[in-house]
Length: 75
Image 1 (cartoon, rainbow, N blue to C red):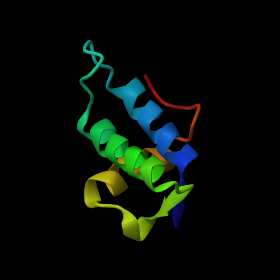
Image 2 (image 1 turned 90 degrees about the vertical axis):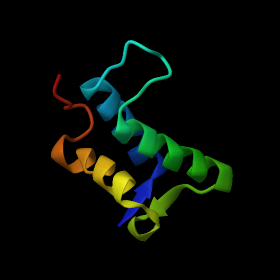
Image 3 (image 1 turned 90 degrees about the horizontal axis):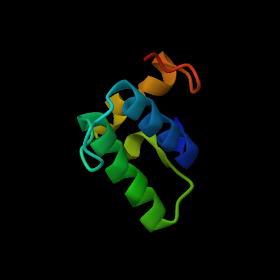
Image 4 (image 1 turned 180 degrees about the vertical axis):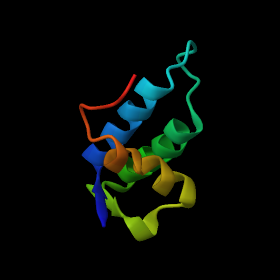
């Protein structure tokens, strides 16, 4: 499976909605894992990343895309 940068963005937003922070710079473990991935994709100029290129934290954080499709994140 290949995750597009838009998938990563949607997963970050989903986790931010699930685990909001009072501190602008603080984020959940999942958001931090995805932020590292998002930055790496941008720096490398890629449009996405294959599942094999993910670490366990990133893979687990991206599961929100399947559990809660974009636009349907629970509060």
